[in-house]
Length: 176
Image 1 (tube, rainbow, N blue to C red):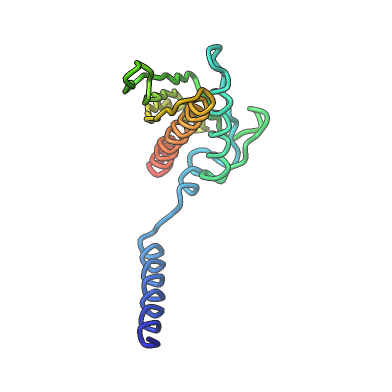
Image 2 (cartoon, rainbow, N blue to C red; image 1 turned 90 degrees about the horizontal axis):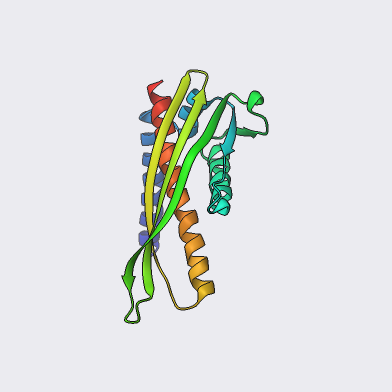
């Protein structure tokens, strides 16, 4: 038993060492490294809520601010003139479409489609990116449950859009 534990412990240490060696030897750099190359140290975020569902604009702005801070390791500024770059949402649309119905004709599953048009203004120029994502949601009986599921699906869909934005910024920063 002791031999087996020693074998597992030494194998685990070897795998950790191999992973660290591989990441350091291959020139791995985090997304924030490439984002700094494109965005700089500080970013201004601008989202104009649409009149139909303004709370979605609030969710979107929160997600962008979290992405800038956590994934890009940049500072979010209060004023546009204090920022090295700007991430602006020109347009966004969050729509719903039913997928399945129960025997009484009530929707039991629907899709949340999210389209966001970003403009990234940097010292090197402006970049526009349209991101499309969708998320499927099941609905249970009860309006409160379906409302919570809908909000959760919207937030998850927006997070998926942020992942696509991160990939785009990293690619642009890498190519710079």
